[in-house]
Length: 345
Length: 133
Image 1 (cartoon, rainbow over the protein chains, first blue to last red):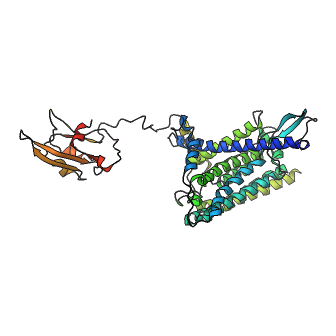
Image 2: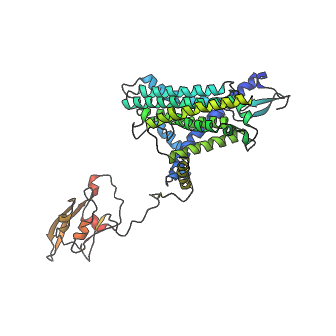
Image 3: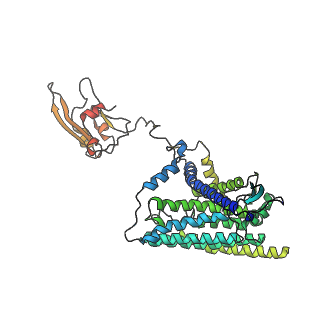
């Protein structure tokens, strides 16, 4: 950043163009990753189970997500007779949208310099830099629960209702521990803006918060996994005990939305984890987005790896872990962090 | 606990490396069933007819009662099966008919692709059984 570079607030037109482009790119990228994450997951898990995964559609099944999309689009869309129609239709959207708009605060890189009208402007590679970025993330994560509860409630099916209740209970429980794990991070950074948190970590690999907050990292890893309902905590889907949980009565594209939301959530949690603990977009290559995407992909691979390795936990074990282990640990971590921060001053 | 986690993860990761897949790309690649595999039956022909002498041992021994035989005599005075039917929907491929046959007239081949669209297509009459390879 040199001194003659102007910020975007001096050029409203450029600001609008940049914003539109950023939103389109991030949204498109997210959706693309979501589509191909399904393929990657099927491949990874297939090979881990000594299978091959999809092989027939395209080279090694590369066109499978497209085929799935087309199939789900033309599938009959069933709404149960006694279902509450409006919530039933709204629920999948209410799950997907929060996870998509959470990505808005994730910084993808430093400033991009653009010449516009003979002047150099610095465009931050982030849709918006809220000064309360972390709180926004926590709030949006909380909104996803509404969709699940609504889906379970409006389906007019006992299984869906039980699944929805279980899922929301699980998400709320783990959100607490996740929030407390994040609290330890901004006690160190003394800012809620994700951009500044990344800047604080951008020195070298030793500046990453994972070294200063190993316990918080571990806690966020576990609670994040549990909150987005991935194995070994995928109670809501629980195909072995609750048919399909809260999405029992859903079909066609609405059903697909739930799974898009699951993968979008994976991306979100991976992005937040990378930003808070692994230095965000700072890293080995000079291109910020490449660094961040590398971290996101590694974490998503890790989640798939976990899924292929560990069995699902029982629901009471899940609740016990959340309330009796992770939550006290997170609180103790905050206490220790607080003492250390005070002593350093 | 951590050690076991790492152990489990390393096992699954090893499987991710190439060369671990046991999948056979079925329609394109087919496995050769073993020599003693009991697949579709076949009636063994001699010079001008089937070996079978319609002695009724195979329908007698058949636990699924899927073999129908009706005997008759030809112009030489030999007994032969006028009707020989195996209903594959009933058959359990136990091979008792092959063991019971005193003249080794019935065998089992390695043919295992027996899917069909109609119930009637699963009833193998004498001609079809003679034609199986």
